[in-house]
Amino acid sequence: MFSSLEEINEEVKKCKKCNLCTQRIQTVFGVGNENADIMFIGEGPGGDEDKQGEPFVGKAGKLMDQAFLGVGIERKKVYIANIVKCRPPNNRTPLKEEAERCLDYLRNQVLIIKPKIIVLLGNTALKNILGEEYGITNSRGKWIEKKGIKYMPTFHPAALLRDENKKVDFWNDLKLIIEEANKNNYSY
Ligand code: URA
Image (cartoon, rainbow, N blue to C red; front, side, top):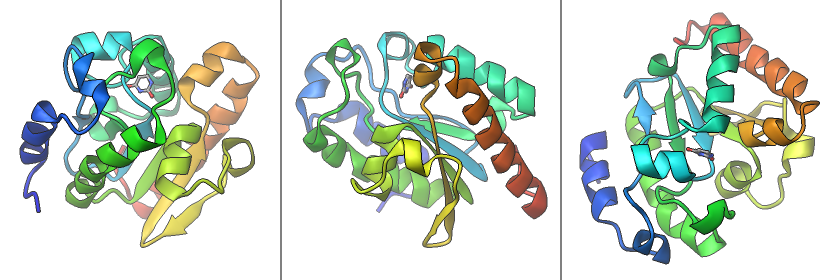
């Protein structure tokens, strides 16, 4: 059992549980408020994240920051992490086995942060957290409550870069999150 995020991160930095460790520049643990009410979970680091050691700092992250600015979310008041902590080669989707081996770290992050809302960015986050039976197209924009946590699946910001039409849905999903946060006095 871990008692702090730093403790988990020390393990992550040394992790060799899967092959992704062989190609990483560094691990990408997570960033933000350790007591965040809202946590965002993406897929895995890309090239920029691998270089900088922080999630969502590349093109997709910049787009997410713009959306945050638009709806009034402060990056430092929420917590941002990924399913896998090391960059998959050529930014491919993490393999099931890679995700499974890494998930314990994320579960422990969630246990310490205790978010009220978890935003699942894209299919990889959705399927690995809530189950293979879910799909982002059907699930996005709908609350799913499990074990006292409210999950909001939405598109991955990289999907918005490929298809502009998804921006409106992403925006609307963020507004649902803000609405719920305001109702319950959650910080963002
Ligand atoms: N895409 C992700 O899923 N996570 C990141 O940190 C960056 C891009």
